[in-house]
Each structure stands twice: as C-alpha cells, then as structure tokens.
Length: 235
Image 1 (cartoon, rainbow, N blue to C red):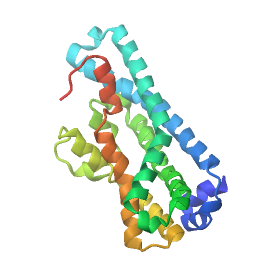
Image 2 (image 1 turned 90 degrees about the horizontal axis):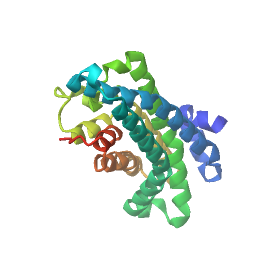
Image 3 (image 1 turned 90 degrees about the vertical axis):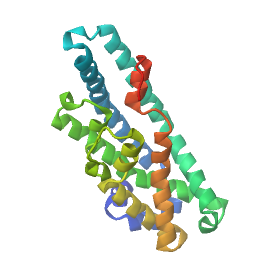
Image 4 (image 1 turned 45 degrees about the vertical axis):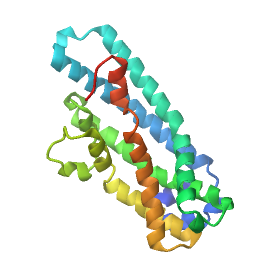
C-alpha cells in the first residue's frame, strides 16, 4: 500500500521499480475510488434529472415510475463505466504503443506502459471522488444541467456560455489542475522507465490523457444516456 501513496507524493521512487511492481493493489484502489465516486454520483445524477423534469413539468407532476426508470438507467450506466475502466487502460496502452513504438522499445515494455497508466490513474480517480464530494457539499439540488456536474477548476471555467457545445465543454473540463498533476507524473514515469526525452514523454502523457477524453465525446455521457432511456431528444 505504501507504493500507492508514493506514486502521489514521490512518483520517481515508484517508477524506478515499475517493472517489478505488483498491479493488484493500485487496480483495486482505483476500483474502490470509482465505487465511492459512483455511490455519490448516483444521487447527483438522479437529482439532476429530477430537477430538469420538475422544472419542465412541476414538482408535483414528476411521475414516480419515471424516476424509477431514472434510477435503473443510472445504475446501468455506472455499471457499464465500471466494466469499461480496464478496457480503457488496455486501449490507451495500445494507442500509445502504436504512436510511440520506437520510444517504447518493443513488446516486452507493454506491461510497463500499462503499469504507468494504472498508477497514474490514481490521480484521476482521486479527482473524480473530490469532484463528487464537492457536488454534495455545494448541494445536489443546485444541479440543473450536465455542465453543473464539473466543479474541478479547468478551462471550462473560462467559458462564458456553459450551454455551449457539450463536446467542447467536455474537452475543456478535461484540462484542469488534476490533469496537470496527472500528465506531470506520467511524463516523469515515461522518462524514468524508457529513458526518453522529456518532450517525447510529455507527448505520450498528453496522448494518454486526451485519448479517453476524446473517446468520451463520441459516446453518450452518463446523464445523456439516462435521458435517452426516458425517450428525451437531446440537442
């Protein structure tokens, strides 16, 4: 477990021995953080949908059957996201290997790339949990639209019109203080493990961070999936 804390505070020490690092603990912690986040986000997403329906129909006119469908839809979406986590790691590892084959020095280094991704993911998992906690501290009754779900300071804070294209908003929100920490740690990891230039290591880290964000814009977000289950048309 000490390794999990050192990757956050002293990443260089962890990455020096990454080829001998057992990945069971960081994978388990990532999943535990996701489950904690999912528990909090369930109530936040349910409140967002309810607030939207109440605003359109009136609080007294929101059918209980509809909210029951909302709960099922959210649970299905969160379960899907949990299953998708390891697949996202594998896909990102493959993308990095294809784009930076010469720097990664052969197939035998695939495990090291995967290990760096999993260890660095602890930062993003922590970010999601912090964001979910902030939503509850602020009050989930204040969540009116998907954009209200993003409270970690990022480029989206500089967008004057939060109803702007949600794809642009999602990409902007992926550039935030935790993302800078994540890319910095991952850059250090690639530099230490593969002895490549900092510029190339940064390119690999930036690609690892942005690839999932770009892929996320091509699929329905959790809240949009819930609304589609209910038959709402989204624009």
